[in-house]
Amino acid sequence: MPSNGKKVAVISSGPAGLSFAADLAKAGYQVTIFEAFHVPGGVLMYGIPEVRLLKALVQIEIDAVKQLGVTIRTNMVIGTVLSLVDLTVEGYEGILIGSGAGLPSFMKIPGENLNGVYLLTNFWLVLTLMKAYSSQKRIAPSSRDYRRGRNGCK
Image 1 (spheres, one colour):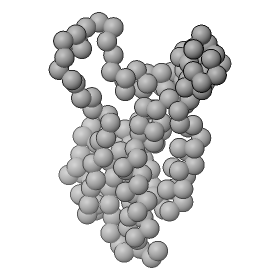
Image 2 (cartoon, rainbow, N blue to C red):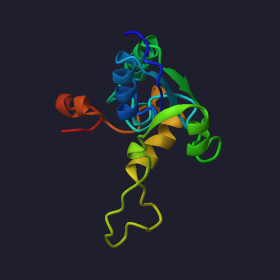
Image 3 (cartoon, rainbow, N blue to C red):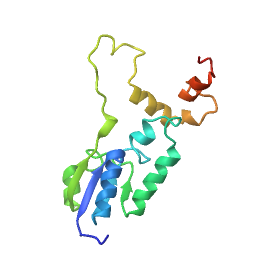
Image 4 (cartoon, rainbow, N blue to C red):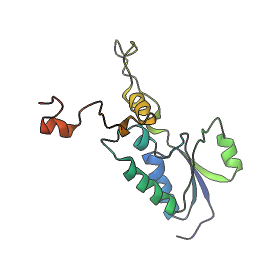
């Protein structure tokens, strides 16, 4: 698709950001994704365990978005490294803020703030950043194990 000369910034490279960026690139927009983490993919890379979604498959999708001409800038915390005003000064005519699953939502139930109670998104984020998924030793049985009766599952 020929360029229409318009620049759009996408804040966050999660599912919404990647989809939005790909669609706009196909429509001729010059798109730049700004990702706070050092690897693009958002919740697809940091919030879903490897046993449920292979990181290599997510990377294939990210590479496909790049092939459309989308630029991805990592380690870009908008509000710290750049502001929304900075983006408009740089010529971005549109900005999508795809903050997604990064912010927790509390249930407001007794005990949710006790020691030892963790948000699942934070738990998976820490495990992913520590590359716990690459260990041969699994920390929890998968649904496949339940079906096959492995790891003490019945």
